[in-house]
Image (cartoon, rainbow, N blue to C red; front, top):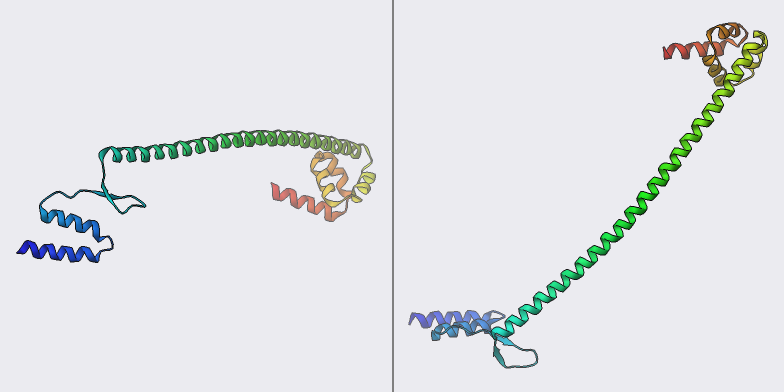
Length: 183
């Protein structure tokens, strides 16, 4: 009696489920005392056929083959991306090398320009040394203040002492203040 009540309860429960039909068969098979058999609904047919072991093996093999194919395709795509990244990396390396070469040439060019500029300033300092202090002071007062201060910084003390009385005093004071700050 109890078995019938449980069977009725399970049957009602199975009917309420959206996929109640397979569950119903399992319940019915349990009530009969036999093992449930799996059934396959083939598309386009209303007949149920038992799932054979060889068919299941073929389907499993087909699924595995499809997975292998997907993996092979993904591996090929990854290999292609790696190859592309290697090419881009090589291109970037060559561009970096080119930029470093350009930077080196620019640095060398700047060093040469600075050297030429320093030589010109040394010539000017030599010229101011050879001139009379009054003439050198008058010429230097006509230059920009920053250039005068730079020239005074490069002159030896003896030459600077001779020129200071003939330079505009605000320039001399600025030069002195800058030198005291640096000391």
